[in-house]
Length: 216
Image (cartoon, rainbow, N blue to C red; front, side):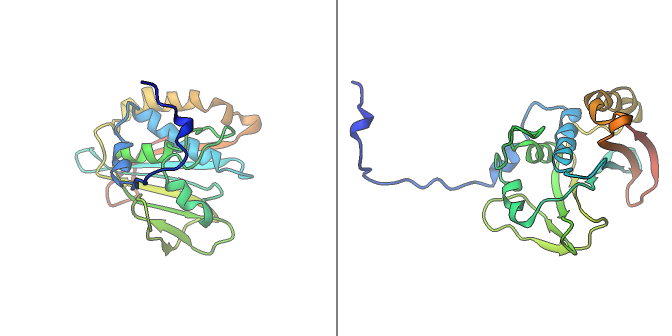
């Protein structure tokens, strides 16, 4: 029997579909590798660059005494996320733009979930005196904290409890990761029209001592 759905005009009842915060963890279960995840976050910074030229993106990977990665940080000096857009930026698939490198609105959330656990995201726009910080991606009312932010504007994301996918081996970074990023962002790195400054640092845990440095 074929049901004529056009004849069904008045619903008999409704069903409520509640969002689950488990979705944010599930976003991390994807087939991306480490360089893909970094690219998602860098794309996010480039998409928010506005009139900042070049946009500066610094990635700091902190390692313990045995060289194991323990904390990941990425910070840019782009325009930041306006207060009115922060909720949309956190929502999976909340941002879709054909004019952006990230066309699906999932990049930042997927990358964070795949890399580890969000410690915080802090962002600031030029018209704000302080940054706005969230400690967790979730549905519903998300607590937002005011805090100092080093810079006129930008966004910083810090991730802990890192996944084994994170590469902290200097040789692997030099031979594979830095070359890949240099090729991927070649058009943004052109000296005659530079739109991106990209730096990767390996640092010791609990300090800012740089053990290895790559300028892409």
